Amino acid sequence: MKLTRTWKHLTKSHRKRTSLERFRLKKALENLARKEGRGTELVSLYIPHGKRVSEVINQLRQEHGTAANIKSDATRTNVQDAITKTRQRLRLIKRVPENGLVIFSGAIPQNGPGSERNETYVLTPPEPVMINLYRCDSRFHTEHLQEMLKEKETYGILVMDSSEATFALLQGRRLSLAKNITSGVPGKMRAGGQSAQRFTRQREAKVLDFFSRVGKHATEVFLDVPGLKGLIIAGPGPMKYDFGKRDYLHYQLRDKIVATIDTAYVGRQGVKEVVGKAPEIMRKIRYIEEGKLMQDFLYEIGHDTGLAAYGEAEVRRALRMGAVKVLLLSESLDTVRVTVKCGSCEYNRKESINRRDVSSLEESLSKKQCLKCNSPSLSVEKAEDVVEELAEAAMQANAEVEMMSVDIEEGQMLKNAFGGIAATLRFKL
View 1 (tube, rainbow, N blue to C red):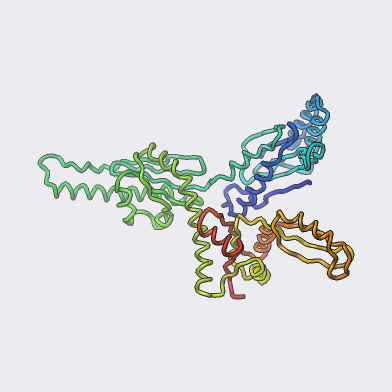
View 2: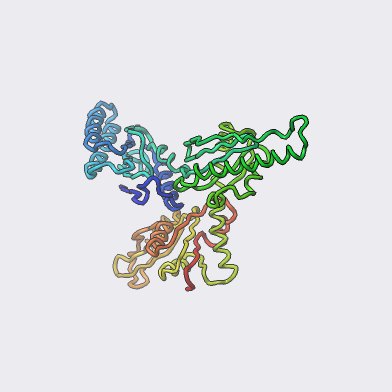
């Protein structure tokens, strides 16, 4: 089997990656990571943007010559074949894409020793490739692409207490400290001879002035950050909650507050504490987003508005009519749409079955006759992934596609109660 695949819609690194795009890339990389060669016969090639294709082809020509020294005839043949296939693909490319290029090629056993067959995969990564890598191994080196699947969205971090406030930005694993300001707020112990009421008033005035400055600096640091996903407010003590309750933050930033958490420290150390907790916070944010999508769907169901559909047949009908607004698909779906065709007449039918049942269907068809011409010529002409098929139909209908995980209650409900396929609609069917 040979496969060439590119993610054209993922070539801009700054573009928000949709759940469908993440799902496609994740599944493809999982498939590649499972493949194993008989020896060090699998070629992984990462080419960064700016690298000349002719230089890479020359490098591969040298590697082809080096491979001639491999003692094992089978290994030598397979490695040289993989390099040749890679060079052939590169000759079809005029220049390396903006995000670079990744090619995997090698002899993959199909059914035990001696059944090896070359498989070649050409990928345009979702983000710029930062390494220039050629490697022969018993596996494909997908880890650099898998790293790109990790969250890269930008979050603002504000860590504060009564003494200071620190502003930082977290994008993926990259952390940048933007600013630190001191409060000027005195401690709660007043100086001798000063009345308690006067001291309290002065301290409260300084707290409010500090809140005002924090709000202004937050606007300067966070407001114009492109695609800011959310704002995390943290710190020891109650000061962060007092600040959050007031209107010192710009309204657009207030709407982006995704978490308020406790830390033991402020300053740089406090920011590091937040970063340590950030993966769980970001995971919860996606769960919240998925929960909201399901709640919107359940609202339409519960109020019998007619603006919801579920089950494969009903959703397909809605897609054909252009009625789907948001298509919800479970990540657990492992269904294929098979086309059964008769080789003697024009009879054909389509049905959806579990992927693991395709072989059983093919075997059973060999014992059945065509319903139209009674000829024993039935076979599976093609089997298409249902997720990909429905997603493509949704895109043609200008509908959003959301892949729903099974790690939250709403995702389990989509899978178990609605067959893993549902949609909210633009209009009643």
